[in-house]
Image 1 (cartoon, rainbow, N blue to C red):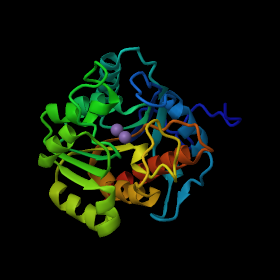
Image 2 (cartoon, rainbow, N blue to C red; image 1 turned 45 degrees about the vertical axis):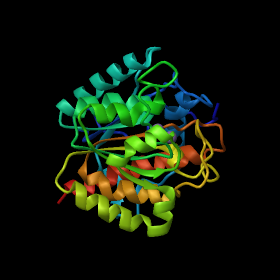
Image 3 (cartoon, rainbow, N blue to C red; image 1 turned 180 degrees about the vertical axis):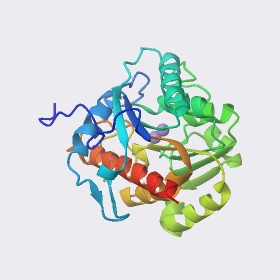
Image 4 (spheres, rainbow, N blue to C red; image 1 turned 90 degrees about the vertical axis):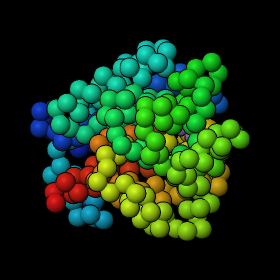
Length: 284
Ligand code: MN
Ligand code: MN
């Protein structure tokens, strides 16, 4: 284990009833198909969060001025459909109090629960994988099926950024969706992709999910299903900064801390970017 073991996310000092943002972790990797370990993601992200200054120069905001809290981890059940229910109940409770849920994974299957609780108009995800399988290894709640489950919630406005892996069937299914491959982003630039997505989503309620493997595995290798030729950490940061003001909820999932900490460092920094970007967007 890491020698720096912090129980809660850095600067998450607000009392629960004051907090505009509620961080929680879901240490679950029960359906992981390749390399397990994402259950240790929440802890690794919290540990790395202590590395950063509370001041974020890119938006001139000090996180010490933003009220957010960390309620710790869900104690997940074994079966993914039960974990999805646990997440749904937790997110529903947070949202009912008018707060924004910020979920640390854990594998991607948990996102289905957050989407069920929030019923957004659109689902925006950074991911190397389409996650559009109807079922995988006997379960419709496998982490390879998340975007498909989201679609079946009636959310047809789905944007997948950074995609570069899926079956022929998944790619056929994705033809009705808005998919920007990692190569599209490299060719057109993340700014033009963000502008297109923003114009589609203006005024809509968005759920924003980041699967850590959207980023090139040569940059952040601490993931369960590594894929090369991916996005950069800056691409993902820019998506989060631009779309956070539209988001009713956020997660950063699939951090599997088997590297030197770079994947969790990017995740922790992106969580900070989400909170400050959402907060500054809500200040008018
Ligand atoms: Mn995924
Ligand atoms: Mn993925």
